[in-house]
Image (cartoon, rainbow, N blue to C red; front, side):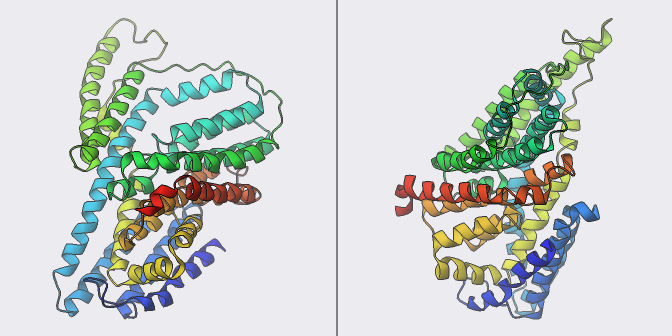
Length: 470
């Protein structure tokens, strides 16, 4: 059913592209050409396979990588036929440059997260929360709040899995609690990522594109907070105040964990400084920060080699030392996700070369108006992943005020919370809480999440009215 809905939605874009004209810069209106229509069908088919990943057990990167390659073959052949053989080369280099910046930024961030995970930073936090003896309602609020607070720095997928593990460990067989706790975590993680340039891929793309400055993102902090608080307050009334059993499990962090946290903070500061003061891509700053970690990894490896060579291979916390290897952390990056971004960016960029994005942009932003269009973008991101949606908006590049760019950043970031399949956080928790947190279970509370979505938009329009004038 979901696949049919997506296919219908994307195919509806075909007649909308009749609005595209030959006056859209260097891109002619090729929306009615056989090559153009075939390119859209390829993209739709590939994305249908992405949605069915859980059922097919086919990695989401595979269909979009293949579709991207074929679409750019169609682009090259089309423009050669038009007597412009160099056009496709210039266009794909532009897309590859955008992907390279995103790839390097995320690779550095993922390496830090993997390093912290290996040093037991997240397990220690989970152990502390489980052993504190909080009531279920307290755990509900704490996991949601921590999801909101951690996701601006860590990605929402890692945050959701961490907090979801806590909720399931505490809730046990109480499925009613686990369901609302998982929904609360998904909403909190997505809302927390919406107001930070580091919190979500969409905000990162908007920041790297220069549409919104680093500190301007924090203007949507209160709307993002309301987006989480309102459904959380409603759902908390369904959570009992009973106390779960306390476990004896105790996990402490390994050697160097706190220093890696400090280096991660220094890396973020470096990336922001590169962008704000040196006007260089933030990815270069992130790679410099990866250099910080590489030198610390050298010291840590030497330190742990000495511990392993001693009579007692255990540290004071009782952990058996294993030599820290930075490149093992790089290898454990989410390569499927990184390659998925490659496929999506090149697919959307290739389809755009046929004039479809220009047509959709004219229909949405000139026909419906900026505010309505940006609200609809958020709703669309609940069905289609917000990454291709946001990349499409950035490729369309409608002339909008800062307030509207902040609005589409907000809606694309939190719109995925409306459905369990609308964000990476929701999909991940459906996998880890299989059979408990399901599409249908989330759908029962969609009305509460939608209320938070509406209030967050109204709050932004009211609180940040000054951004709509420039």
